[in-house]
Length: 228
Image 1 (spheres, rainbow, N blue to C red):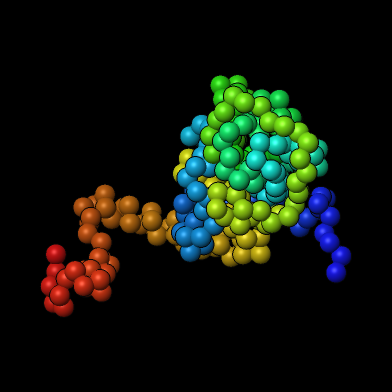
Image 2 (image 1 turned 180 degrees about the vertical axis):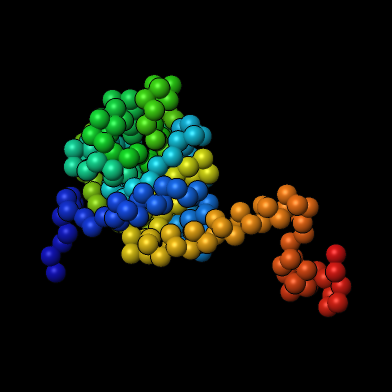
């Protein structure tokens, strides 16, 4: 069996139509319809709470504190891609800063998600480009350790395959498998409609959850026939 190359240039991406539709949903809605799977650890958070991103994952695996492969990924990624960088959650050195993120914006990438540290926070805020990271550190990285591009990675404790749908907002990041994404969007439409109806009911004074008594009985908190 031949070994896959460290750099895979051609990947199958989630379609532009799916990305456009997905960008209209909160990450929380997509996480719910996906069975509460695919969410990254809360350490991976937006640099600024209003930042939003949606697009196909362009995955990068690096050794902690080394960004050689991220430079290569920036050169290879296509407009609309989201760089998803498996930095092992390391926060002892920044993997990216203003220069690299400015290049990402110039090349038309949709955003960057780094399970690791970055730096130049104030300049990144001024850049107005979606960036999610696990923290900040002023220390710079090394640039000589090999890694991999467009292989499956683990970022924020979640498996990310190249081309998967990635959506991020103030709540964090959710990853939806490429093949399942279209079906998830149909479920998301229904979820949004159901929640809107519930909000309307609450506004009218109906604050009771119809499902709660049965759930409490099933958990043994309420006896059969009891109610709150």
